[in-house]
Amino acid sequence: MNQAILVGRLTSEPEMITMESGKIKTVITLAVNRPFKNSNGIYEADFIRCILWNGIAQNTNEYCHKGDIVGIKGRIQTSTYEKDDETKYMTEVLVERITFITHSKKDDEDQSNSSS
Image 1: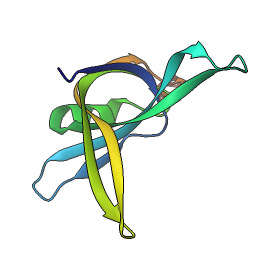
Image 2: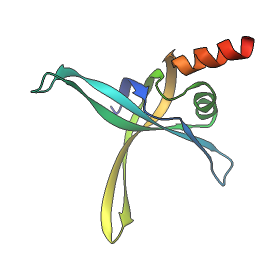
Image 3: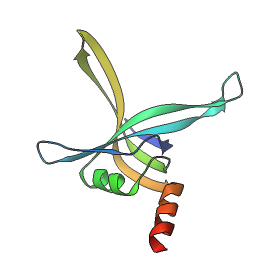
Image 4: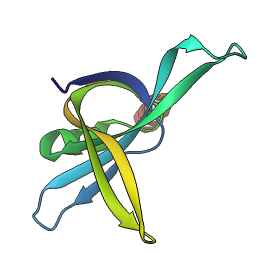
């Protein structure tokens, strides 16, 4: 079974791409904290590239921003490509479901400023 469930913080603004076929693709990177401290007593994080398609891609692009915490459910996919005559490997999560857990303070400030 190939299933991934992650909770993490967006490291940058979602990147929406419209494919030639008309499909919408959004790319996000999640910083997911590890559940243990390293030898220096610091929690490290893994940075995981996630791909969303169509409806959830559009919603994520519209409602999520850098710093937001989201939960995702999806599957891990690996692929290869050639660059400078060298084979490169890429691992990413294809997102089937996303839950918006918290939003950034920037959203609160924007709403406060627009209602003033």
